[in-house]
Length: 146
Image (tube, rainbow, N blue to C red):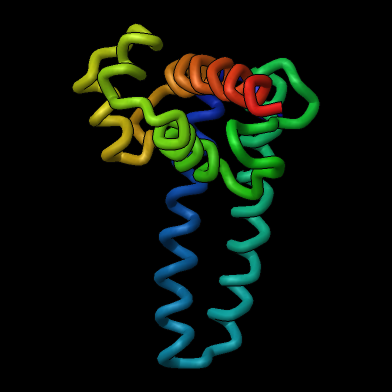
């Protein structure tokens, strides 16, 4: 169980490292078909799944919900989904980066940097701030439609 922002960031870094290791091992396995490499890949897949669940559960608790319902998707299978959905939600709302920056009180340049890196450089607090702004607007849009 992740208990702090620091632990969240360490888990996120570990997840990225494990995904890179898995990609590397999959390339090696394609060339060698070594069963030891396949076993390592399976272990890494389990570790990746575990880390993703830890991150999602932390975010769910941090957002004050038992299940994290991201902007325009029902179920998250990986933390990367949130990052992609922030950009998708802005596009669905037909907002410019300038409009999102004004609403979230974050500079346009910072929004552009976050989107360029798929929000991988944004802190959890920043992701929460932006998602709150977008969620509020999406809920208003949904109520107008229904």
